[in-house]
Picture 1 (cartoon, rainbow, N blue to C red):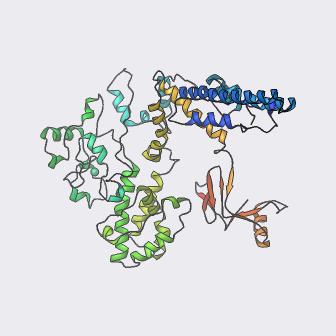
Picture 2: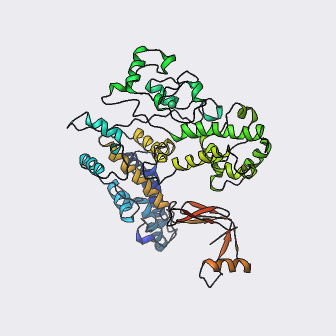
Length: 497
Ligand SMILES: [Zn+2]
């Protein structure tokens, strides 16, 4: 990376460290709380401070020279260094110059404005109907569109979530709030203990507790919904009031309300299933104790998921068919339950099928490569984290002329800072390492790699390549074979680099 310092003083000792000016500006630009125009103010004010320092130092050296305290040579040498203070932002004094500088470096990639021909895009989507990626390709929308003849209509999405970290109603409190957020804005009852708690079907709560499949006769229909609204009896319909969104032309609450993995599985059915399974094996079959399970939960090596290691479970919660874990801890418990305790479950145990089914469902809904609209892409956790930065930038920017472009530039400036710092580079980090000396190790490595010199090889406990951490005993998917089955590989003890 080149320096912004004038060539005349490069190579001499200087007080403005190489790259420090550009790094400083890049990190200012990347800060979501600092609007771009403030960067210019900072540059201007810093220039004044530097000029002041420069002037004072220069006057002092001139005085030293005139009084014969320093040689002409020293004076010139020192003056050269002082030049930097006079113009600390030589090539970076204006926004135009700064953006050009980062662009030339290749760390800033300017956003491009595209006028998307939406109609053309929608038409294209409709032609390609084998892989469904957009809502407009689905039957629900196609049906809706038909009611509008030749008019141009577009779907609008509303995102609503009641999940808050640290909320008193959070998952650790154990209070059930499955889908209550959506129910609260669509006019359905918010309590799961009411007579008809489901917005999809009209099944009584007593029956829901025993039902394991959809009863098509009970699915809510528009006709029945309208009758229920007119009757206005919550206890016999589960509807508090007509859905306010019906004022939006073409909206239907029965067709257009989505589902969420986090609420429905991790904080919902997954919790009940596991609470049931655990209490069944502990209290009915008595094939292991809660203490054994808790010891396994605590001591198990969750590998890459160790950040969401489940806490120990309590018998009083299990007896109430509840498990108090956060959504991500619940995900780990479901994912690893078979490895934790499966070896104690008798072969062909019919109840274990319930676990296998739950595990399969979790696998499917969290998969990132399903052909038809992976649900995990609709999951709210990731979106919220990414949107947070832009929301801060939007709040601090007073420029509303083209807020999208302003935010796009900010986003790219954050990327610029990342590139400049190199924190997202192809850096390889690794844990404590030692040289490979054992002959058996060398023999094993030779089986997989053709190398002659083992001098540069090291063995370490973990290695992080491009942000992905590899550890020993990890199972990785190597490939998908011709029968669509995955090929696995087990990382040996110690990773070699
Ligand atoms: Zn239902």
